[in-house]
Length: 211
Ligand SMILES: [Zn+2]
Image 1 (cartoon, rainbow, N blue to C red):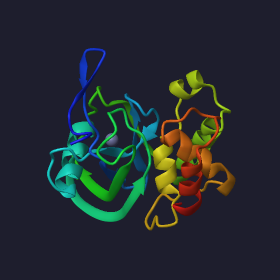
Image 2: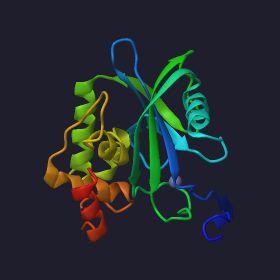
Image 3: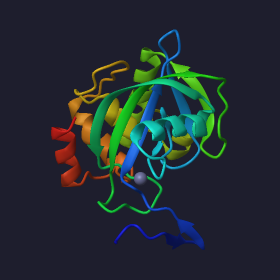
Image 4: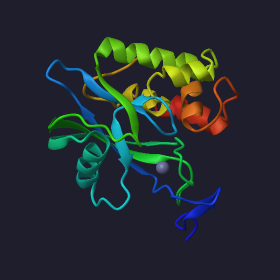
């Protein structure tokens, strides 16, 4: 089947995307959200997340990703969002092309934070105000107003998460605001297009109707 066979890139076997991502939003007792600074493409700060792969069901995948990325043990998971987004990952596009079905959980955890250096270079807790500031930086970056080296040195929220956290279907915690005229630029960069460039029509449509 197309998209299920590993490809080679510079001699390395490239993993194929399964078009399914699970995310775990972990909150501390002060109501702040845990974000890691991603060590791999796409760059940015982001909640814990990863492909479902062969982890089993969504719950098993959320438990596994939380432990693999941050060394934390999940106590409880509350599902609250399921959404398609045409965002690009670092893998070969999957059976249904570029994009992912995102299943998001709110998670409570135990244990001490212990980052996997292959996945994250840093982690910190962010208040609602700080989250909005990161999202504002992402919007500026996606519009071509933040040079790439400045973004890499001090990234905002990963563009795909700006899209997710500003959807009206977001029903719990950490909503962020993005001006309607800025939405398409963020969707376009999440889909793998360069910041500040023209936005393909199908992404404009997504930004207008799936937000
Ligand atoms: Zn993927």
